[in-house]
Length: 182
Image (cartoon, rainbow, N blue to C red; front, top):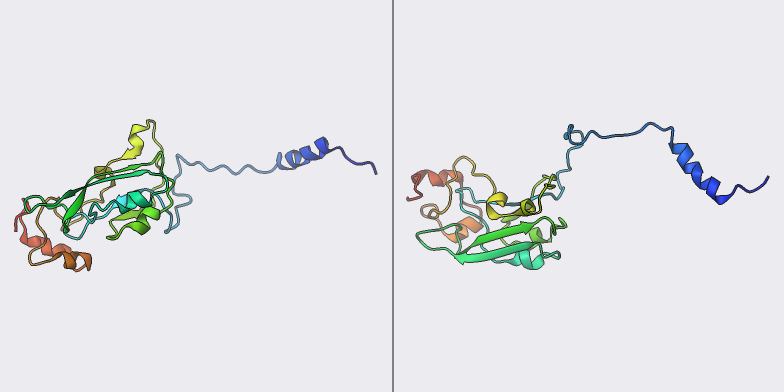
């Protein structure tokens, strides 16, 4: 039997798959067909303590750990009049450039206070480049019931050790009024 030329044998794959049923996902219209797995690394989120203070202390370790140089953090000092986090410092400016981010999660591992985590949100595309640079207000977690918008003082009778040991509960905020004054 004569040998089939290489060019014709190469078309064999094309001809075999040409009549198979096409598998098409209707992605933009039907999004919940395949939800992401629980450990999927998606968009970042800056977390809060139970009273609403931010967990980010502005240490910039996440920016140092980022291999793509996608994170910019500028720390500032807390004052008694304006307290955004329980420690001495907080992240005044926090930006993540999703044009550079490779969603590797090294920034999450570097964070000493677990302020930065990753959500399951995977739709990060947009029509302009400027919208893909997320600012601090875009990354901060939502205010849940029992939380107050920072700046406000720490929960009454607590220390920074109580915050870092996760002993602050949302009920501790009840003693404060809406201005954040105990």
